[in-house]
Length: 284
Image 1 (cartoon, rainbow, N blue to C red):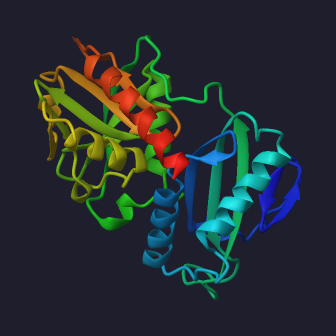
Image 2 (image 1 turned 30 degrees about the vertical axis):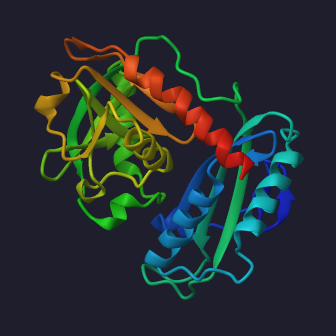
Image 3 (image 1 turned 30 degrees about the horizontal axis):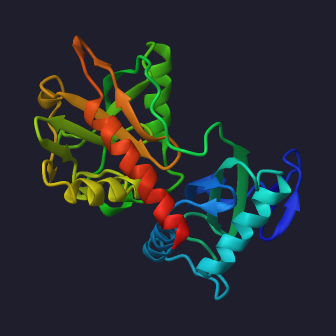
């Protein structure tokens, strides 16, 4: 069952109109959330990112669009799908209502919430091969719109097709300065010695929730140094470890890039701290 503006429909029901602006212009935002036993991980962070993004895109935020309202709508959607006692992946999409061409006739919005089961209630790392490549056909822009989680993801889609066609698990995406900005579906971290580097938001990467949480964790560890600095493609093969983060997987280690193979020691040590942070957040 999917939740469209508070009403529930079966997944095979036609809900959206042909002139939906998310379909026609990518005029939409989305949040992907991890929900465990009815609790949304890092809900406040997702909520405030969504509100800030809606303001940037000049969408009208309804008066009832409070944190408590969205939490309740997510909870109801999870229950409608029988997942309240398990783990689920929830996608909340917000799009401007129909009307207009590039210029909309209204800034009022609608929302759609979907929920699907996940295997584990915790973030886990699977010891498996994960090979990636550099995607060089198209580039990310270095601007604020690239930081937003919009449905304008055609670059990520084409990179995903490229990875699939060539037998890779993922790709690095580069910006217009030819710096590595992110992965297809997450924020990149590079480990060299006791330093951990991640691209700054000014390089065009997504303003990721788990990126933010991991920066907080690393900053609290005396033996590690967190650097928000640009990463050149040349640095990738000199790194000790490479991993990326997103709200569903948590931390995903990269095992191979071209001829270089990587360990996942730091990634595994950070994973336990990330799980602990998620548990503490859910109790507050």
